[in-house]
Image 1: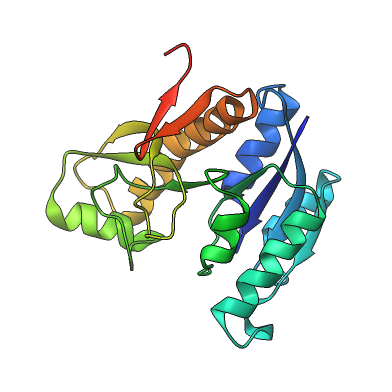
Image 2: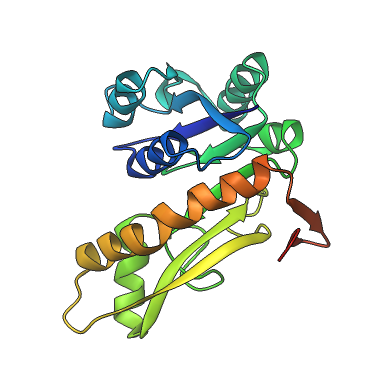
Length: 209
């Protein structure tokens, strides 16, 4: 079984989607072995505890620089023998030390159809505010491999979600989570853990598809 670490900074709704998928046997050859939080006292840690998953807190404010913090993250992941790193609402910057230790082994879910509404400053409700301001008719979610450039890594999966008249950032966020994020992330994890993902020339190829 491949050991999965889920990195969180908040409530952990995407973590819960992964936990639920694992209980249904939908993570293939993968098992969630560690939940690592950038903040103490977030509900994601309760989710880990309630499901018997080891957790650890590396609080960003305890480190003087991104370099020191990234080194600590990389060390914890390595010490735990992690095979796949999943960023699930992890809102803290990490540097190339982590990417170098886990090349093409870090994935992230972004609440828009990359390359739209992505990059620096596009996170949380800000993504949905920008989408509504632009008047797009569809938005959605993207699961991609993480590289040093923000939201620019190879795309694994995407799903479009309808933007409805009268949507607020909050209602659009909820619909995208329910209809896209919570479906795509477990699927991408399963594909990785079952050895079906290869990366060539900044593109993801999925065996059998």
